[in-house]
Figure 1 (cartoon, rainbow, N blue to C red):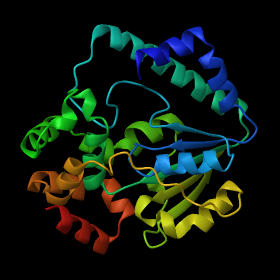
Figure 2 (figure 1 turned 180 degrees about the vertical axis):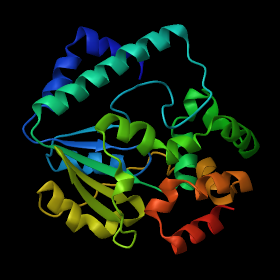
Figure 3 (figure 1 turned 30 degrees about the vertical axis):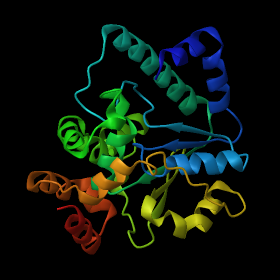
Length: 266
């Protein structure tokens, strides 16, 4: 989060406005690791007049969170992130205490493509000249800064810790591509991004709106370097094994899907 965002929170009542939004009568929390179609949902709900907030974390903030690793963070930035993390936890407490129901929209994406997309999304955190780098430079930086863990461990290190819900206790139907979980105050619509076009009716019913028309948003789509990287990059055997054996990958994709995805990326 940029310094001007912190100034807004402190000086212009940003925190008050955020809390009022989180405590509004009808609210949907778009909550995921990022690069899983959630900006498409954000734009769609916004254009439909539905109150929503968008978060990759409800408990912490720092540069590259769940997107990148091994970034240099200054001492002043660390202090800022500690403060912003405190505000996130405060909002989460208010959410749990004052809301009768908490509606969550949460997407997932295959870890191979998601890890690459996350790397390109926040590449400027690595180097301001990131967009001008060739493929060899990008591959070297990818190996150093990518976050595979951010793609496959998010539900365990973020979602479960914040909400107290272990989604792996609920069987996911990979054919339908979505699942509704109701636990305590939480109503959770969990979906696979590659199935989103096919489940618009179910999503609309969950939200309580007429059939939604998805408004696409893909900030990486116009980058030729991104397209080339996505087309040509192959993961190492150790990376494939790490992802293949993760509970995340095995939970959301059946055997045939897993084999097809692995064949694409190895």
